[in-house]
Length: 106
Image (tube, rainbow, N blue to C red; front, side, top):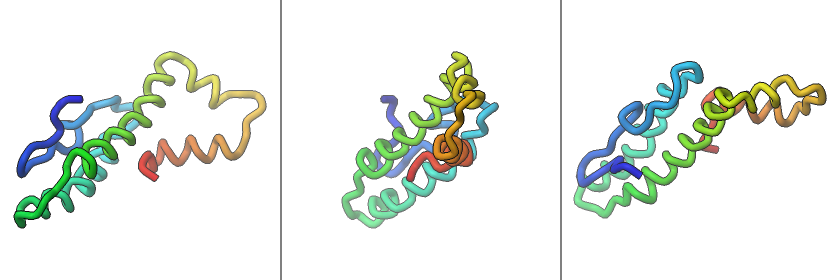
């Protein structure tokens, strides 16, 4: 993984990862990266220990990787198979809508 952070700084938004403009994940990644980084950097600035790896980079990567699965599946054609499946399940549709709405971290 590229360096997303260092002492006193963290990359945010598209500087962390640019996936695809079709899925509009950039704003979501920007807001989540800022939210995750703020608390840790605040602790560092106050001279307290702040673990950007465990409290910023890893959680951020989990959500970005979730979006990446959707983007890759879209371009490979697998995503359309799920969306247009003849026996759709409401639970699956709800999960897909949640991820596409930005809930990749919860």
